[in-house]
Image (cartoon, rainbow, N blue to C red):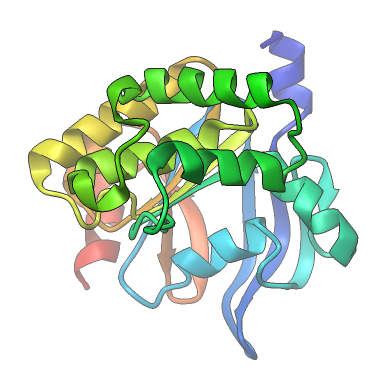
Length: 240
């Protein structure tokens, strides 16, 4: 990325934003700016609003107040018909993988590409091969999800998130259901993707992860979400 681009065009920007969950405001007055190539953690105890922030970014939750821009779209003013176009600029990875269990890995990825407007069969096949290669699963295209380990299923989910070359990957507890060794492999994969210029926003409550793989850290606590640089403050937020 050009230096002036990274400074003037954040991929995500929240200004004095209120984040809601249902009818309740869970975070007040959040400020966050994510530049291309950033690796950002959102941390905090269960129920502090982490996932609600993610849902706001993907326009699943409405914005409660303030301003939010995500990949060029105003989340507070976005029209229903624009939401699919916003989501094509985002890659989303969930804790529980959310794969379609009745079809192969290749068919899972093909389904997403066709749903987002891809029509050329060769282009679809080539892109699937490319993303599976990037996550180390070239030999697993014809496997069914139940034939894969948890770590392999999460790699498929990451491959799926890469299909449309997103500006940002949003990962909600992507290592939550994995053992430590497998989680480490997923983190190395995400860091590699990030090193190529894709911004990553990752929700986690595992301190060991964001201590080992350093990035910017936003802490959700007491209806606020603020960026922290003091490890003691982060530790306090996760333990009290």
